[in-house]
Image 1 (cartoon, one colour):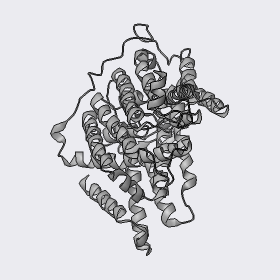
Image 2 (spheres, helix red, strand yellow):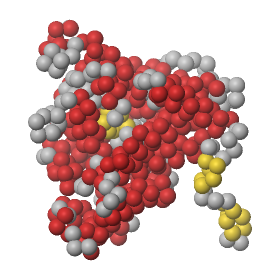
Image 3 (cartoon, rainbow, N blue to C red):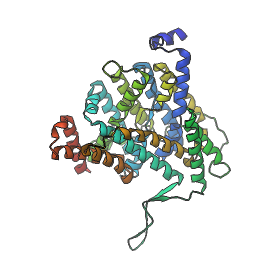
Image 4 (cartoon, rainbow, N blue to C red):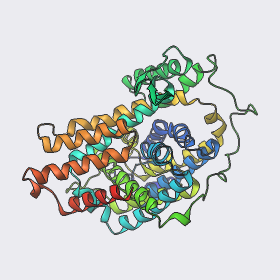
Length: 444
C-alpha cells in the first residue's frame, strides 16, 4: 500500500513522503473542522434540520475533496464554503424570502453548469476578465459580512430596528449588545483563546477556540448535552434535506436571478484560492498556471452538485488548506487524508449538536479577519479602481447581501471606466457581465 500511494501521488517527484503528507492532512482537517459546526448552524437559520446538515456537510466535503485528491492530485481540501452558505441562508432564504428547497435547486443547477463550464475551460476565461481589484474586494466584503454574522449570533452586536407604533422605529441599525450576557462572554473568551493560539502558531487555533467557548458555556447554561447523553453515535439521517428540489420553478424568473447571482458569487472563489494555494506550495508552472486546473475546478463543481443532492450549499476550495501546505503537503495524498477524516467525523455528530451558536462566533470573526487581508491588493490611488472596490466591500455588510455588493462594485467599475474615457481598459467579457448584472436588476 505504501508503494502504491507513493507511486500514485508521485511523492518523491514532489519532494515529499508518506509521513509528511499524513501530517499535512491532519493539519488541514484540524484548521477547517469548524465547518462541521458552523455550516449546520448557518444553514439551520433557513429552517433546515441541524443534525441532517452535519451529515450532509461531512459527506459533501469528503466527496469534493476525494475528487481533488484522486483526480487533480492537489493538496487542497474542499467543503461547503463560508460566505456562500451565508448567502444561501441570509440572502436567498431570509432576505429574499425564498424557500430553502428553492435555494438548493439553484445550487444543484449551478453545480451542473460549473461542471460544463469547467470542462470547456470557460470559467478561467471569465475569471481572467474580472479586474483584480474587484476580486480582492469580494473577498474583503465577504469577510466583513461573515464577521458581522458571527458577532450578531453571539450577541456581541445587535442589528435591526423594531416598530413601536404609529410607524415609529426604535433602536439603531447596529449597536453593542449586552457584553455581560452568557453568549457574548463565551464568544469573546473563545476569540481570545483562538487569537493567542494563532500567535503561537497552533494550526488548531480555530477548533480549540470553539471547544473552549463550548466548555465555558456549560456553567453558564448555554451548552447542553444531547437528550440521550451520548457524544458518539451513528450519523444522523439526511432524509429531511436530501434531494429536496423544486424543479417546477426551474424556468421561473426568480430562479434565473438566483442562479445568475450564485454563479457570479462563486466564480471568484475557487480559482483565486487555487492560485494562492498552489503558489504557496510551489506548484505553479513556469507561466504561473495551476497544474491540472481543469480537473481542480471540476472538483468543486462535482462537490457542489453532490452537496446540493445531499442537502447543503456550494462546495469550494478552502484557504485553510494553506496550513497543510505549510506543514509540507504537496500532493493529493494530503487531500485524501482530509477526506477520510471528514468521513470519520460523521460518527461524532452528537458532539457537534451540543455546541451553541455563540461558540462558533470566534471562528467566523477570525475567518472574516483572514479574508480582510486581500484589502492591501486594492489600488486606492486610482479612483476608478478604488471606488468600485470600496462599494463592493461596504455594500455587503451594509445591505446584508453579498450579491448587492458585487453588483455595485462591478457596475461602478464599468461606468467609471466608460465615463472617464478609459473604456479601453474594459474587456468585452467585463462589459457583457455588466449587462447581465443590469438585466438581473430588472428581473428582480
